Structures are given as structure tokens and as C-alpha cells.
Length: 261
Ligand SMILES: NC(=O)C1=CN([C@@H]2O[C@H](COP(=O)(O)OP(=O)(O)OC[C@H]3O[C@@H](n4cnc5c(N)ncnc54)[C@H](O)[C@@H]3O)[C@@H](O)[C@H]2O)C=CC1
Ligand SMILES: CC/C=C\C[C@H](O)/C=C/C=C\C=C\C=C\C(=O)[C@@H](O)C/C=C\CCC(=O)O
Image 1: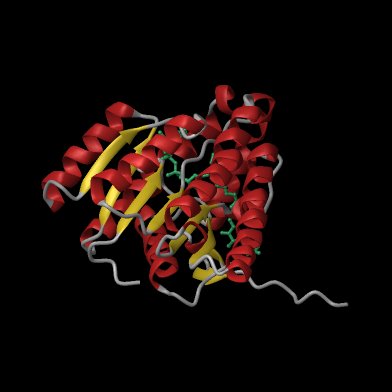
Image 2: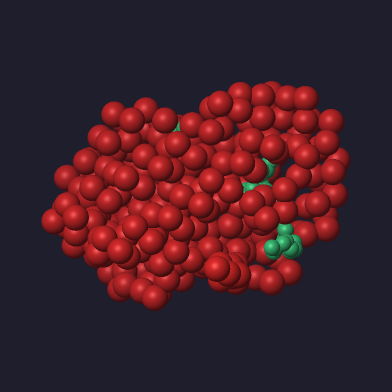
């Protein structure tokens, strides 16, 4: 997919990984809708991106992805502003084992909602022109840990849902590729939450184990995650892919054993 003039919607786009991929898309002459709960950070992010990439290429939409109507409106506003939608990155995520129901709502339920909304605006089944969806999982789906049981469950779910939807898209000729992205630890504000009892609840006592894992496996820069995202966006052969990004192996793909009869 050539990116010039293409339109991307990124949930959680105001900071961290979402902002990094927004910048890379803007560098490649795409248009970007930053969809985020945090109005202050989101507006500042848009202001800085406008200064760097000129005005008119980026919008910020305040939206809680768990609010179905607000999320629907965010998609609608993006298409009304830019006239099309080609790329959807369901990136918004939280780490909260205390309010674990919220973690499921943001990390999994909203990824499902975001995928279905993306198909309404991109799939041939709705008379649209096709596109690509990236759902953000985590290496937590491959190397689980005692301090993030629900977070880990949501990230497993993102992979399973994305792979199943990729098959549905292929068999239904939707014209939409759906891939999952599994970063290891990335240097963003999310990583700081492991220290806080408000986020970790009773699992905060395992925070040293988490920090040992970070020391052992290293911490990635958001720019490398954006590089992996661009590969998933531009390589039209990728559908149902599970991209892993780690310090040890860089950008690579998980391979699944074929099911034996
Ligand atoms: N930082 C890391 O080590 C890793 C992060 N990930 C995943 O990458 C994604 C992005 O995480 P980071 O950039 O690291 O986190 P971050 O905390 O820096 O950014 C997340 C963004 O999502 C927004 N957000 C949170 N809840 C929202 C909601 N209900 N509605 C709309 N926006 C909401 C936040 O306001 C924030 O701007 C998440 O899905 C996370 O699970 C995956 C692997 C590693
Ligand atoms: C509070 C921070 C919240 C989430 C951060 C993130 O989502 C959680 C990551 C959890 C685990 C990360 C594991 C990283 C593993 C590696 O870097 C690999 O090199 C380890 C080697 C093999 C893993 C097994 C495999 O690749 O299948």
C-alpha cells in the first residue's frame, strides 16, 4: 500500500506507540486521526505534529474507546474530514489488574469494536475499497507473567480474534488485511504503571519480577514499533500475521505449527 494520501485512524494515538506510528505515517504523507481519551496530551500532540508536518494532515478526536457511540462518531468524523479511511490501528490499551474489567473493556472489547467499525468503513462487504487493520497485542501473549494475568488474557484474545477475522476477511473477500502486533517492553508511560498499586492491585508485590524481566529482555524504542507497523501496513501479502518485536530478535513473525488431523 502506497501511503501518500491514505488516511489512518489510530486509537491511543496521543502518546507512546500510537504517537510514534502517527509520526511515521505523516512522514510518509498519510493523513492521521489521533483518537484518544487524553484531551490535553492529544491536543498538544496534534499541535506539535502540525508544526512538524504542516496543518491539515492530522486531527485529534477526544474519545473513550469503551464508549461505543463516541468510537462510532470518531470513525465518522475521520471519514468526513479526510474523505476516506484506509488504515485502522487499534492501539489504545491499559494495564490495570485492580480494575481488571476496565482492562478487558479497553484492551479487548474495544479492539473488537474498533475492528468491526473499521470493516464498516473499509470492507467490500459494505461497498468500500479495502484497507488494513492492525490490532496491538503484546509479547505478554507469549511470555506470561504472574503480575499481569488479565492484561495477558486480553493480549492473547487480541491475537486469536485478529487471526480469526483475517480468515473471515479472506474467505469473505472483504479486501481488508487484519494483523496483530506483539511488542516486548517499550519505553512509554505504560511501563511506569507496573510500580503503582492503583494499577497492579495485589500483584504489585511482583513488580521486582517484572523489572527483572525488563532488565533481562531489554526495552524497545517506540520508533522500532512504528517501523514494524509500517511493514504490516505496506506489505500487501500480510494477512493474519502475528508480528513480534523484541530486543533479541528485532522485527519477526510468530509461526504456528500446522494443525495435524
Ligand atoms: N509499552 C509497552 O511496553 C507495551 C505496550 N503494548 C501495547 O501497546 C499499546 C500502546 O501502549 P503504550 O503506547 O505503551 O501506552 P501509553 O500509555 O503510552 O499510551 C496509550 C494511549 O492510549 C490512551 N488510552 C487509554 N485508554 C483509552 C481509552 N479508553 N480510550 C482512548 N484512549 C485510551 C491513553 O490516553 C494513551 O494516550 C497498548 O495496547 C499496550 O498494551 C504492548 C507491548 C508492550
Ligand atoms: C506495565 C507494562 C505493561 C505491559 C508491557 C508489555 O505489554 C508486557 C510485556 C510482557 C512480556 C515481555 C516479554 C519479552 C520477551 C522477549 O523480549 C523475548 O526475547 C523472550 C524470548 C522468547 C519469548 C517466547 C517467544 O518468542 O515465543
